Length: 161
Image (cartoon, rainbow, N blue to C red):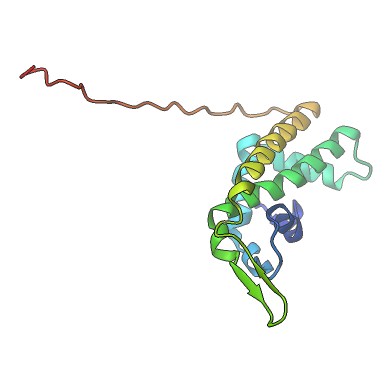
């Protein structure tokens, strides 16, 4: 079972999103759904990634390749969870925060420009994790590509012309 704190910290996830612990609390990030989602993400890269990561993490002196894997998986994990949280970011990021004297106001969707950056970072780090696994001689699962298709009706009725 994937334990989120073995891969990243709550503060790192908040740092990727640019929010505070008041906006996104530890209690929320500790929900099992986020650990499960990370487990799915890691399994999509390689079915052995979690065990290879744990072996590298418990190694007395990690090799250069193991260190590369550890670093890339840890950063990837923060981005993977941040990517999942972006869908509900407008719900936990208040528009106005104030204590009477000091006040902060955000735009309607403060994460509009962040979405592309997190997605780009996520994809880049996913590739980096895959490369680190290959560097350790591990098999990386082939990416499943989606085939999209669409259909459109004829502009003319075949019966009536």
